[in-house]
Image (spheres, rainbow, N blue to C red):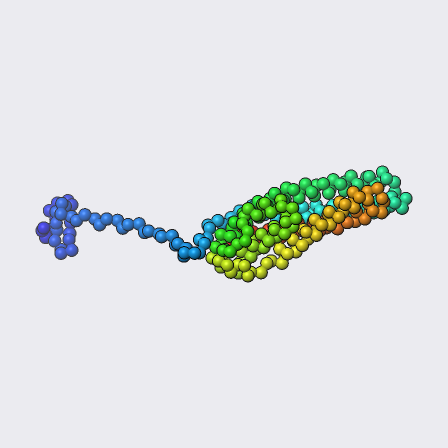
Length: 263
């Protein structure tokens, strides 16, 4: 050591003296990277999944197709009303059968288009339903009665398809309630359902029942003029109910999808 540097590389220590390069202390090792420990759920409590509902396109597409189907059934209802008036005029002798056929063809095309849209929309709705259940359940909900598989399989069980899909949707509705903070545990079971949920299912079940009655009338009384006319009017009611059910289903998809994206 010395009071002044004697060449390149000499360094000044804290005692005010200069030291040769070979005596310079090694730099301290870099600090170890921080260790992030994943929290572990308590024993006996289900650990929440990490699935998040991030598909903006699926919700928007499903809702749009449902609303489009609602419009088609509304047009079908209007066409059936016009068809009924044409049939009534034919019974009264004011129009010929060819006049009725002229009305019947575009009405039948509209009804067929509405049912074709229903099939495609049902596929989109089922896919959305499956992902929505998984996302809602990922909020740490325990004590669930159903599961994601029921969003698809319940529709194919005779008679039960009028009940089980609604029960599954009730769970999605409650688990997605924005007033509840995750983890939900069992608190979600006491949450209120959205009013649109019940209205949608009521219209859908009524539409299925009325549609069956209309089909029976149009087939059983096709050879009688008054009976066939009654079948047309019942079909009008069924089309209106189908339109309302599709519109409400679109609103429900939009509401629940927005809840799950914003949570």
